[in-house]
Image 1 (cartoon, helix red, strand yellow):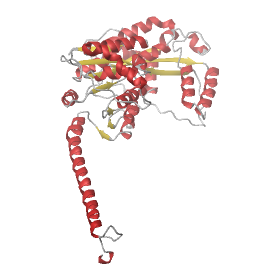
Image 2 (cartoon, rainbow, N blue to C red):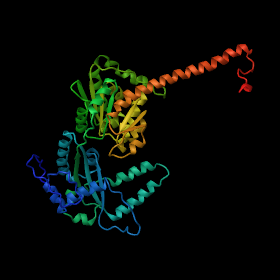
Image 3 (tube, rainbow, N blue to C red):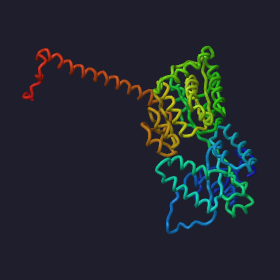
Image 4 (cartoon, rainbow, N blue to C red):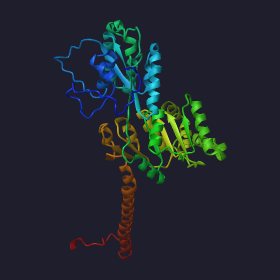
Length: 446
């Protein structure tokens, strides 16, 4: 637990898990200090792994005959660093700074990261919160807003000091201030086979690829390079990270000015036309950049870009880029970005995802594709097509998609031919029958 990186080589001693009959014999681990801390029931280490277990795999079950719980009440939380850091209490800023350094290091290596934290709750406060939660969950109007408020109420001051929300037992603990921010996780999310080649092929087919992810900016950009979305052919990658509406507006316009400086003086004319137009949205014209560019925007800036007239600036700038990466975005923002493209561009949108946080995005797109894997089946149940590998998307679009167009064209030709032939016979028979009610077929012949 020294906090130093372990250099692994052929002489590095592996941890012996023979004492645990449930251990996987193929699993190799080298940090002996962490295993010793687990064996000694170290409080921060125990809390860290307890949180990971409860927030990932445990399905709680209540049995009335045995449910009378004792001990402290604890709230466990995990999520993005940008979200959880806003919920932490100031007294442990030093620990937060140290964790941030580790997160930046992990993100620089392309790892997917999360921050984990907890706080102990007072019994009286918790019972009062449960009562309000029940009232919000049974409300007939504004249920989602009320539930959101009640969740925000309890998910704050995760690093709380001496307050009414902390149990007396926890106040007596000398490790109280240390164990509140339990740490961070970083995992390697390996790309499936054929992902870079698939992206390259789709780009040759003039299909624009947008990446909507909850990962950190550094992680998202590293994935972009490893997926062959960002490469040396891109002249510049514009990063939108403004903290106000004016900052985001200036960054988007400056990016568009560099991509198309000759016509930038008329950049506001389209926005003015949209403001004066009717309620029914019109389509934005296609604008070509003077080179190949990429755009990276974080979730905080995206929240401003999706408001008011800024959404026009976002669509115009993003559609001039070869690739767009939206990082640290929420599931709702993913759906809003897809809806934005459908609203202002004459384009067919396809959304592909593999987790429950992609469901809202999948449902918003014209074509819904789910990847069935280890992250559950929620996205598959909401999709039109489902397969196990991302690389199958290439065959779905370029092979089966082309065949589908051919079959549809043949069907339309047959449809028009059949109807013209059927109608023309009746129209010509009208001259023979004097446009009377006489039928061309005698029912008695059948």
